[in-house]
Length: 590
Ligand code: G6P
Figure: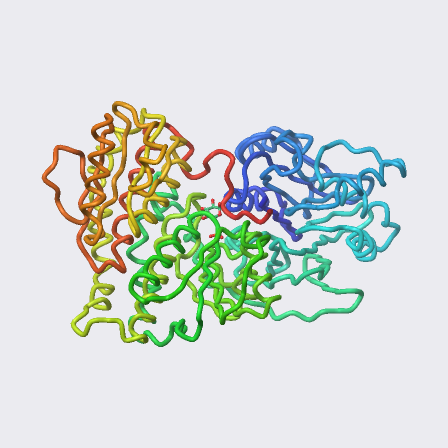
């Protein structure tokens, strides 16, 4: 994780760098730092905690006049979030910021120590700075090249050298773009960081080294010059504003009807724009976090309605396990960012085994989008809140359409079925669900002072429970677990206590009666159940009822209620909703 920005141009870089860091804060926010360069002086300012702390510190200092700088927001991997460990790191004539993990950092550190280098931090980054410094005589690109030959791992680096008025950068397995402005240029972990200044950029490919001045960008790979096609993003400048909402999470939930309509439009016009899954004998779905839970909904729908064999795994397991590819298989990778390190590794594993890959991805320029064989893009736009909401809904939506298309192709759909007509209604129905915030506030009041909560459901309702539980624990820090309703009694029911909230998700008619029995089991042990269903129940329990719709899309009406309950609960608990502790949005390390 971690976010990087760099600037060279006519302006004083401080405001640009701080503004950029704020837009990258979703990538990590435990400490931050800036380096400014003027002639041969490099000034470094760091602080622990969020970017505002750095901003305050910078305001109170008289800084060197400068037109060149790099900055970093950190999500700690090697070493605690202290000022010493915060980036930029300087060794000798080299100052740099880094996103990624250097796998052989300890080995290199020991070697360098023997050569007389002393280290001031526990980070793997400082080792890279030391290595580049070791090779630096007067050719910066050569020094970077030589150093990186010894480095194993992932990196995006922004580098300043004493003795040069240029900005340098390089990447491998961590994202980095070069932004092109007028008499100014940038580097950044993603375009959102610099969209206020330019919409022109190009992607840096693996181990291309870029040397940047205010009006020139030179790229080389292994000593040879590389030509680049400049791209233009259509990201709106205000796409990253809160638009009057208290939090990005709320804004992004409220955008769900619009982004779903946009994502569905081409496929509702022509379902054949979606790939044909019937060509494969087996589907593997691989993803992390919420994206994996979206995959669980897809697996349930594909098995249930399209009679398709589906395996699902979290990417961090899939990449290392013995996957048996003995049939014609398609690997579906689901990822909002398209940069999740484990999901990238799972994709590459499939490709190495000559297995086809299909990605469902939001960021079109991401590694997964570029390297997968086929892509389906969701149109979430920038998602800033660390806890995903709108992107998850769209991932589920695409999986639902894929399952429906597969069932249709296999002749498994009843003639009078109205699935696509129901899909047309979804944006309006989601809006209806979102408009009932008072109900969610009421539920939040019931649960916000509890420390343990369960979510139960069966089949697709279990998959939905997983996301509901994750959302709640991510943003409110309440411990919660999702369980298959029928499995709870095999041990875990011992945890149910008087007054403990249990959310029961019940939408699947075929299994409803069984879940009702499980609800009785927890109630008779003192649980306070909250029923989330697509029909009104005769019960004293708290309940939230959403419109009934085709089972393909029912989770798309249930999950927004759970997202808003998590949001309201976190608000009552005074949590930092958009940036929960310990998390980062884009997990670009293993
Ligand atoms: C992180 C985020 C989650 C997200 C997961 C996968 O853990 O906090 O919200 O679901 O990464 O991210 P991706 O970008 O691959 O969907």
